[in-house]
Length: 272
Image (cartoon, rainbow, N blue to C red; front, side):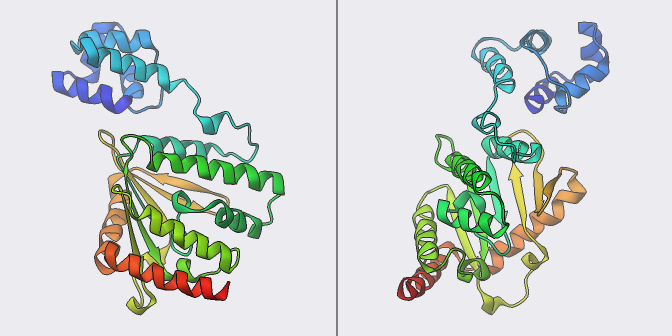
């Protein structure tokens, strides 16, 4: 919402102070609305749109978007005590991104995990069973962002270690790799594998997630055992965008990756 309003103001060549003076607001109010640090109301947005001379369908769209800001998503109504505010923010970002690019290091990325694979991962953390089932349901719910109308482009660069680590056993992994192959056929999903034969690569520094948006700045999410952190300053984000580009260049191509995953899937099926 803030990015939309900032773009409209820029088009009018008005400063935040000039807009605030026209509306009789403190100029910090306009700044905080544009940066997302302050919730806004439909009345406030209506006033801003008058200043920006926005009418008709575009005005209706932005007013509706303002209403949606205050509507809880499915992840906020789950009632799960294990849901951290960071996860809520991450899911919201995933639902509004135009590009999601993941390098999960030693795991299959969450948006491509099967329920059994996710369950096995969570059990290894020795969480209570009720919490595990809640988190598995949430992870499956997050995956709908890749299949909805207007779904974002999704890129996953997966290390061979994640493909070969038998999380949950051979049957679970055979099913997981079959799921990856199915998802790889979607036009908005690109999967690339980084084989052991490559040796050292920039992705060994750790897992990261890049989220790009149509009108807002790119954000990077770093996850750890106790939570995670979002990076949004250009100097912090750029190294990860560069690392992603490098990984895509050295990884197997999407077509080569399909054959690579198929060969590993056969090994699991034989073990099973």
